[in-house]
Image (cartoon, rainbow, N blue to C red):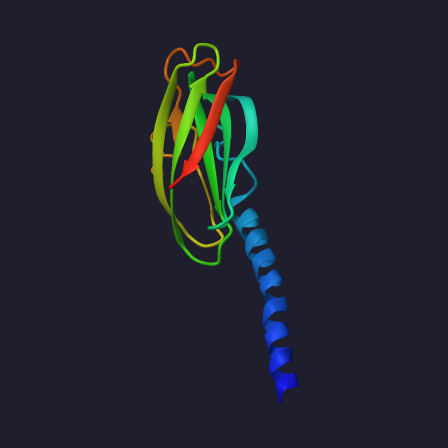
Length: 151
């Protein structure tokens, strides 16, 4: 009897890995790899997708990139919920202009479904508020320092 229980326990643990692998592949195939901008939008990428931070406790990854879209400069965010449960993600993004030490902060709070990737379009009017317009004086071709603090 104990051998059957041990086999069931081991089988349940082994099946966890394929489940998360399947969820990751499903999320990537349905949402696609970083390509949040519609083809018709005029854009220039200053810094391509970069992992900002991974929250190991909640299995949340936050990526960013810096783009020019229709004459405005943005930091676009992409959030990946690797967890097997829906979650509320909450964090602050700090952006510092390395040329003159000016800085600003933006707070983000967003509900993200399990295994989902949420991304911003190329405008600040995103319903998830994941496109952050850079203020005047923040040159995307110069040094911008982007950091994150999870809450």
